[in-house]
Image (cartoon, rainbow, N blue to C red; front, side, top):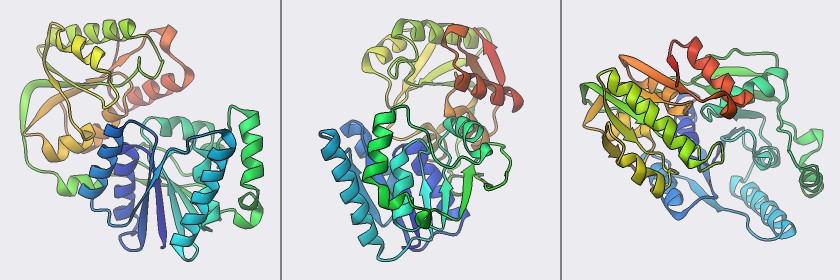
Length: 338
């Protein structure tokens, strides 16, 4: 195979599909899906891969077990990919820069070029902290795991296996630097298959994210912010529909569904970017959210009267989150402090 795509989330899969079209990889391409979530998330990725036209797909489930067993399974999977590829891959596309294992896979299959795929808002931080400084490998928090990894994957750490060139495929307005070529993702694929749909004036999608589920804040704090955001939008004369994230908990969604001002709770087995283009019979005239990736992606896919990005209170703002809000301000989004 000429092109190997390594992805672990729905948005990375959309990025991989866009890169396959934009960068001339329609033939001799293999998609590797890494599953480490719930069964529903596994099924979502599988269904999306089929709908997006991927023909050669290899599935990889979480490497569970002790540290030793986990690393043994990872090494075995690398050898499997080397066998499947039959020969050296010309390019490897990495969905999540921070998964060091993906980098070892790219080296193992002998990729001459590594392309880092758009991974949503995380891309801004990857670019700022690593790629713009010509650092093409992530730094692990655990020194112990980093040491074990360097031992296990030692054959693929040698200079002989190092890729010759690096690219970043992204919809964000970022610049090429020494050692890195930035390729613009303008969503050619999704725009090409997008269906006609009416735009409902005054309807706004408030796009959810699992902020309490991933530990940025507790659920009560998140619900309070959502309540304030809904109140702000209603006062603007908007009809608010909450668009749930796949990782939003049922408990949280039940409480959101009962909030005054939320006219509908939308759930889907596909990401909002895909739903907006393919499945929805009526599109919103405006969109809103906090620092969700979907705001930036939808801004490229459609035209909106307003794009609202609600800013967290200072106590929830890390440097990485501040960077996303700063970018949204630079793009003309209406960043609102609640």
